Length: 120
Image (cartoon, rainbow, N blue to C red; front, top):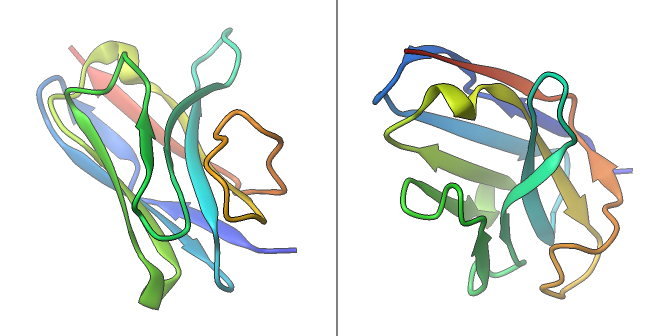
């Protein structure tokens, strides 16, 4: 089982930026970021394949967030710009043990999450 640790969350104001990190205990392949707001289902917001050659961003974040990875560090990043109050949620990273690009398939490992709170 791969251990995933998210970091970088916090309390910011609307319009600010944050960079989340997902650090893995070993090499990771497909990785995605999900978020879950209070009272809502967990939602996929970004994904990246093993090489970084394929990425996915949900429509709600596409113009503001970017996903990237540093395979030498076994780490995936989520750069979040122009944050809005509706981005407030717990953010989770997860990984699939394959070389594919199906970001909606089942995930094998999950982190514990990091809280992002955006005040207006």
